[in-house]
Image (tube, rainbow, N blue to C red; front, side):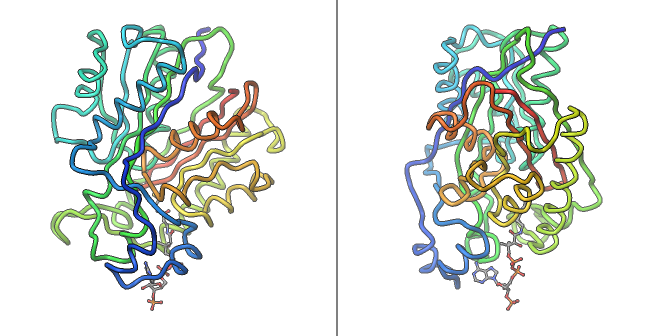
Length: 313
Ligand code: COA
C-alpha cells in the first residue's frame, strides 16, 4: 500500500499588519471586545499586488525548499481557496505558471475554511492510488476583498495569507486518516450573498459558534475512533483559527493543555483555507512539532463543511 507524508511546509503573509486599535478608528469596536470574544490581536491585510496566486506560489516555493524538491518534481497542485483571483482559470493554474512546474493537474477546491483539509484528503487519495508521488496542497486567501469593512460583526475577524505543504509518497503512513463532511442546510448562517449586501461575508456568529464547537467535538471522536487511538496519544492540535474560544473547547475535548495547541488566531485572525497550513508551518519551523509527533488537524466553515486529518509527522 502506498502511504503519504508531509515532507515540507511553507507560508506567506502580507506585509501590512492591521491591529485592533486601527480598527477602532474605522468601526464601532474596541480592542478589548475583539480580544475577549475572539482572541484576535491583529491580522495581515493584502495589498493590491499580494494576490491569492502570488501568496500561494510563495508559500509553495518555501514548502518545496523545505522538502528539498524542485518545481519539476510536482505531480499535482491542489489550491484550497474561497477567494480565487478570477472566476476562471483556476488560481491553481496561475500558481503552476508562477512556479514553473511541468504540465500536471492543477485545480481549486472550494470548501471555505475546511478547504485545506479537503485538499489534503484529495492529495492523499491521489498518491494512495498511484496518481503521482508529490503533491502541493496550498491554502491561500485574500478575504479582505470580500469583507464588508463597515460591518463590525465580521470585519474584525478575518485576515489574509497562504500556507502550503508538500505531500509525498511513503512506505509508512504519515497521514493516518482524513475525514470530510458537509451539510448544506446551514448555508444561510455563513455566506456571501450578492443579493443581500453586495457580495460580502455575512454571518450569524452566535449560531455558527455553537455549531462549530459541537461539530468539532464530534469529529475529534470520529477521528480517534477510526484510528483506535486514545485522545492522550495526540501530541498537537492544529486547528482552524476562527476564534480562541472554539479552539479551547476542542482542546478540552482532547484533554490537551493549551501549550499543546498551535494558536495563530491572535496574529493572523481567521484566514479561512490558509489557517491550518499557516499554523502547521509555524509550529514546524519554530521546532514545537517534531518528527513522530501525532497531530490532529481540524476545520469547520461555511457550507457547513468540516473535516479532520490525523497525522504522524
Ligand atoms: N465590537 C463590539 N461589539 C460587537 C462587535 C464588535 N466588533 N461585533 C458584534 N458586537 C456586539 C453585537 O452587536 C452584540 O451587541 P448586542 O448584544 O447589543 O446586540 C454583542 O456584541 C454580542 O454579539 P454576539 O454576536 O452575540 O457575540 P459573540 O459572543 O457570539 O461573538 C463572534 C461574536 C463572531 C466573535 C462569535 O460568535 C464567533 O466567533 N462565531 C463563530 C466564528 C466562526 O467560527 N466562524 C466561522 C468558521 S470559519
